[in-house]
Length: 86
Length: 253
Length: 114
Image 1 (spheres, rainbow over the protein chains, first blue to last red):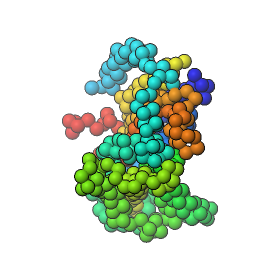
Image 2 (cartoon, chains in turn orange, purple, brown):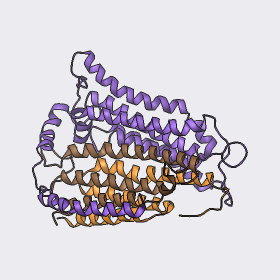
Image 3 (cartoon, rainbow over the protein chains, first blue to last red):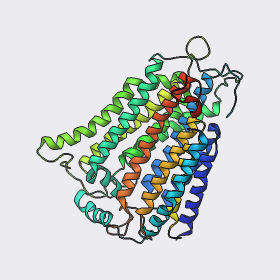
Image 4 (cartoon, rainbow over the protein chains, first blue to last red):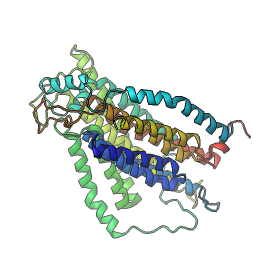
């Protein structure tokens, strides 16, 4: 078993757990971004450049951006109340 | 069902399926050393039959082209659903003022952000088109190139602000781009049927290996997918960013 | 550790499901769904791997060099892009839910309570 693939798999297990265990949505966005980056590195190590292309763009740029927009929009909806973080 | 009961049920289900997962992991074929007959058959046959060097594009657009048709219409449905949900409840009017959160100022854009947006948005769009066009020779294709080109639209938003961005991104153009891309893919299949061959047969001249314009009908399908994916993602960004604007009167709703 | 890819895929699935089961915020739940999706990508790509093989692109190498499986890469490629679109649809649903009911907690959104 190559060291690189084994290390990336263990790192992916850690970042996946990080995404789930980060309960606040605003912090979870960053964890999602890191998870997407590690996933793209794993895809490159598994000799899949096409998939790594798609995963970098989608997982580190598009999906966290959508999350951030939704969180900002929901905060604007709730602005009459004092802001509270879950 | 209380949360504790739900968690207890989940833990019980995990414990029951854990032996099955372990047995399955032990009986899986050896990682990296088991035969791959379907992949080897395609790797051996595709450069000679279809004159392209990117095997993943060959599988996506030719050998399993029908599956990609289904995927593209899945994308069309998801984008349509998002647009209907968001535009349906908000209306189609453009709103000029950004939404306000109590206690937070709206900062003006800095010159560095504007400069980087103006420099890099055309470069990234060009890179996205390059990746999409070189689908048949190097890693790339319509899916990847479409998403990269859609990301350049975000840099336009960051650099030019809302009015500049809405001036460039008009909803009817994006709707036509997305629907037209999906329709182009379906029309490729029907064009094959029009000359008497089965659906999605590659009937155009195939070109030479390692040339950008090789692959025949796969080039047209690739262009359709790139347009659909790029248009779809920019439409999603547009609808979501419209949600952060206000109606007349200050705060939202 | 020959079992590592399969175990990591199973771990990601399990912890993603745990996040969905115990989530208190619908936006957090959509993030956990993304983790579950990534478990399938890891499983598929690990099933198609071959030691000391090149990527399935024959531009710099002659056709016939041992390469990894292109079929699973095609599956995962379309899946990644479409998964992002479905995540966008789910986020739009969460946004509408927040507008109507002012809360995103699954416990407060039970359908039969007034």
